Structures are given as C-alpha cells and as structure tokens.
Image (cartoon, helix red, strand yellow):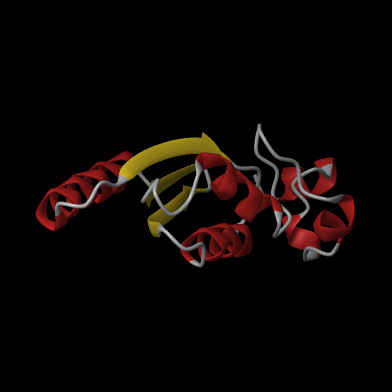
Length: 118
C-alpha cells in the first residue's frame, strides 16, 4: 500500500471513529510476512477477532494498522491472533508447526523465499 492510500485509509478511519462515538483505538505494529497470501491471512485473522473494526497490513513495511475496541480485545490479543495463523510479531512468535504449515511462498524466515520476492 502506498503512502497516499495509507493516508486516505487513516483519514477515513478517523472520520468513521468520530461518527460512531464509540471508543476505538488505533495501533500499528510489525508483523512478519512476505506476500499477498500473507496479507490476506494476517488481515483475516485480525478482522475475525471480536472487537476489531479494521485491519490493513502493508507488505512493504510489514506494518499492520488496526482499529479496535479495547473493551472487547487487548493489544496482546491482536498479536496472538496473527501468531496463531503463522506470523511473528515482536511480542508473540508463531508456533513452529503453524509456521511450517504455511504455503511455501509464505516462508518469511527462509532467505531463498525472501530473495525470490524482491
């Protein structure tokens, strides 16, 4: 996602948050991944987490932007959600068996796979 898209996404999120009047929190954190399949998996895991309102992962920066309701879900829950589908964060690492079950093109720890995606 380019910077203009990120900015537009953030502006729309802010406008939506103000209109609903419910307390929502925005957070950004790094999530390891490498391809479009990773993006889909990461975003889906977050969006299926109760209390998450929006999630968008950027392949270039490996940063995810999440809008969530802190009364329903914690920041650690967000990290656990992406780790549960095979993606590491700085706070929670994916279990080896889950990571190894990922599609071959999603093996972000494999140097050869990383080179092929550049």
